[in-house]
Amino acid sequence: MSTQEEDRWQRVWDDPMTAVEMLADPGALSDFVAHAAELRRAHAELEMLHEATLEHASEIEGLLAVKIDEVEALVVEAISVISEPLRQPAAATSPATAGEV
Image 1 (cartoon, rainbow, N blue to C red):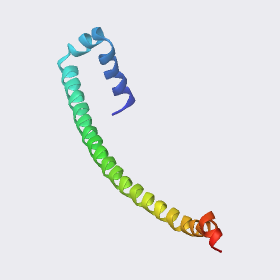
Image 2: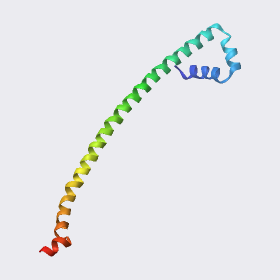
Image 3: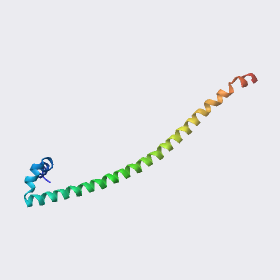
Image 4: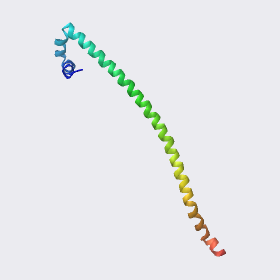
């Protein structure tokens, strides 16, 4: 659709008196109805795309949640592995074991 056509229909949407004058002509009214039908089709298409985008985003969110859980488990495991050697020397120098040496 050209900018000129868009401007023409924008005047119809913006000003009821202009709409009455323009749409009094059967040809203009027919063009307007065709334009409105085109807008409805475009809106329906955008609505379908929006729904598909929301579904895709939901799927991605689910996948991210799984990956976050996996990373958290790896971090906990890594902390456990790293802190294990740190705990062993501390146990050897505790007051109970120090008196036994």
